[in-house]
Image (tube, rainbow, N blue to C red):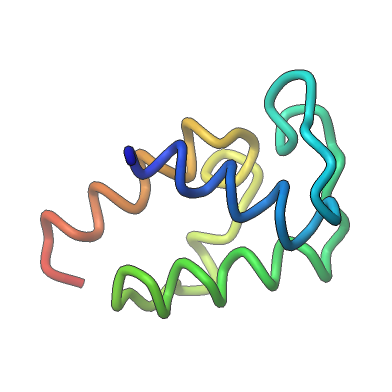
Length: 79
């Protein structure tokens, strides 16, 4: 499973109560701040990462693709 697919699966399962989003749930604005916090916690645990406050911005969390790219970048840097 790709990082993007894993992120989307987590969002649909845990944040949308099993509902399948028609498109990108982040880009559609389906997550509130609590759900984004859940997503960040999941990513930090799953990929052994730590997000700085300046990374938690719309540019990085505006779509599943953007979040997956951030995760890949941080993993490559070993963070």
